[in-house]
Amino acid sequence: MWFAVMLPLSAFAAPYAAMVMDARSGKVLHAQNADTRLHPASLTKMMTLYIAFEAVQNGELSMDTYVTISKNAAAEPPSKLGLKQGQKIQLRYLVRAAAIKSANDAATAIGEAIEGSEAAFARRMNRTAKAMGMTRTTFRNAHGLTEEGHLSTARDMSILGRHVIYDYPMYYNLFARQTADAGVRTVSHTNRRLLQDYRGADGIKTGYTSAAGFNLTASAERGSQRVIATVFGGRSTATRNAKVAELLDLGFREAPSRVALRAPGKPPYLGRGAGAGGIAVANNSDPAPGTRAKSVRVASAAVTRSLRPKQRPGTGAADVAPLVAEVRDDIDMVLKEVTMTAAVVAKEASAPTPAAVAAPMGVVKPVRRPETVVAAAAPPPRDTPTPARAAEVVTRVSTSGGRHWGINLGRYPSRYHAEKVLLKTALAETATLDGSLRKVVHSNRGFDANFMGLTRETAELACRRLQARRVTCFMIGPS
Figure 1 (cartoon, one colour):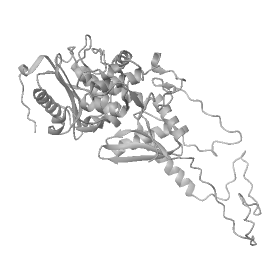
Figure 2 (figure 1 turned 120 degrees about the horizontal axis):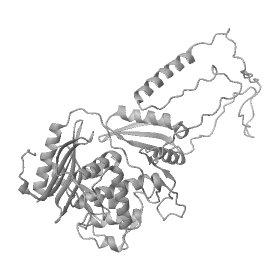
Figure 3 (figure 1 turned 45 degrees about the horizontal axis):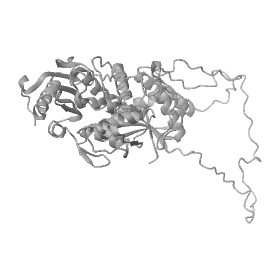
Figure 4 (figure 1 turned 30 degrees about the vertical axis):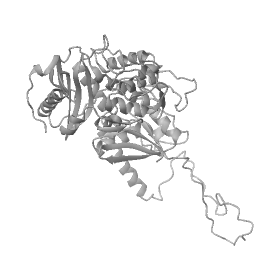
């Protein structure tokens, strides 16, 4: 159990910096030297991992992609996984090693796999940092080892930690694992002491170099509260963890028990091939084995105008009663409208139609099919006599078209939030999601918002269209 004990600054390397933030709103609850540019050490890997999640979501590569380890990556100093030049390993294992063991060789390999070189990856890190509002951060490498000009602040690292939590919630549980299979061996978390001893702690990242001291960006959740604390400059793991626990305690005391969640705006996709405005240009070259071809991504421009088809001639407004639901910012209003309209439609459908009511003018009434006409009749087998007036059984082949795929729109704290997201998305994306099943899956980590019953092609198209509107989405394959 942790106790809030005020530690003297002599317990920290000079200089010292700290920040405490209410993760739900982004409100700063405490800051000391929070804008001083210091060596971030392995806190850098939060950005490396963030871009890895972004690259997977946007189809640059997948967690199953095999990465060939370069001489540069294999030569990185400890902490490392011990990868060898020419070795092939799946991206998922590199991600686990970088997040949990803080392996420098794994971080470098991730950067090279995504951007081709560590220098190019560092430039992407800086573009992404700027888009997040990290105004005083400059990255020079993917791992955080001391390098001239590689600097950040407690404020910027707290901002980055908040984006990791809310922009890619489907991956955030990775940072709470105390051990993980990293392919070549099992690795243990560099911050398992805090995860074990501080109630509610679930991440995020430690860092240490002789120039930086002992750094940590940590997050903890208790009930409806979530707090982020960042410390730069600790003299030891113990003093750093004690200070972070003290700051988290301060955050839980100062943060209101209830506050509206205002997740940070997800930065535009600035990946490989992205041009002005965050528009990624399609790459038509043949993909490497085990990877998927890149496609056009429009991450910063949402659809602003859609032409509505003209009404079919010969029909009146009284005959066609489409349910037109405009997606508004207030989803509660949309829910109310849909519920009321559905009730009216059901009432009208169940009411008998008066015989005296004539068909509206201009409407051609369908002619009753003659009784002698049988639809979809199939010839009987040759060896089976056809009985007179035999009952006709009409069957059809399933038209499911391999509808075993789905898409996930993220994990939410309650079923209500997940259902709201599903309804809003269904109304906004009727072209691809029509006929799909909205499904909320509950686990001990939250409520997953899923659309099921799609073909692979439809699921892929739906995700692309949603990502173009900056909606989190990834595909769910057949179980």
